[in-house]
Image (cartoon, rainbow, N blue to C red; front, side):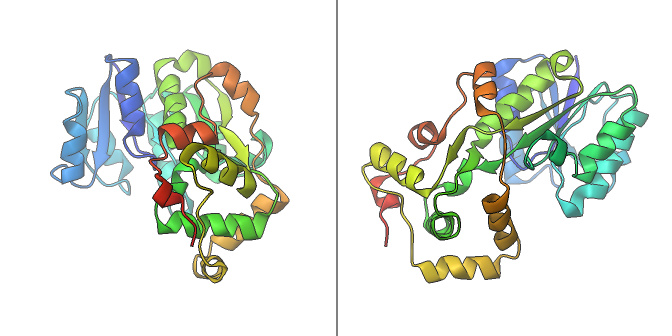
Length: 280
């Protein structure tokens, strides 16, 4: 029975997807505290989930906790690059058969390789199989509440009619689970992931049809403040406006017809009410 290690900013959604697709796994979930409420809630989902109390700054210790691991779904931002490289090297050292990395789409496959961690994976994997997933922005970031109104106002005032791609984390983790359950089909493959391409007017119209109210926004001085207070926000918005994501969405739809576009996400996963959507 193969064992799988999972670390993901998408939380436990990969585990949920694996549980629905197959029970022929031991899923290793690395946590700093196996006694925490969130860790115990995760473990209670299935007896095939095994909690491992370790720190990702000490990658070799993770492998000492188990004798047979096929890591990982691992998404590294700048502070995690060394963790990601160390994990790849340790995978190779322990004869891991297949590794799955989740990064960020950067205007097509070639540009996406500029991220140093997947570059390290491609160049140092040896005989280990690998798959790299490149999701775009998360639809889930537009969940109900005041922050989503500020973010939508920023989209409206910064991008105007420029469309940008989004995907729900639930679909990211469906593809991640597919790579775990069918690694031979995904070996040495990269895949950009997006479910919809919309601008603010599209979002507002879809919201009107779905909830009965247009997209909620807030005072424009707050979205200007967001661009200054959150250091990454301004360059991200500028990149969306000049370059942007370039995922082949029809290709993904052919592979997985249940892929959610923005309006489907609003209906199935958005958890919006008409009150949530009211503007100020």
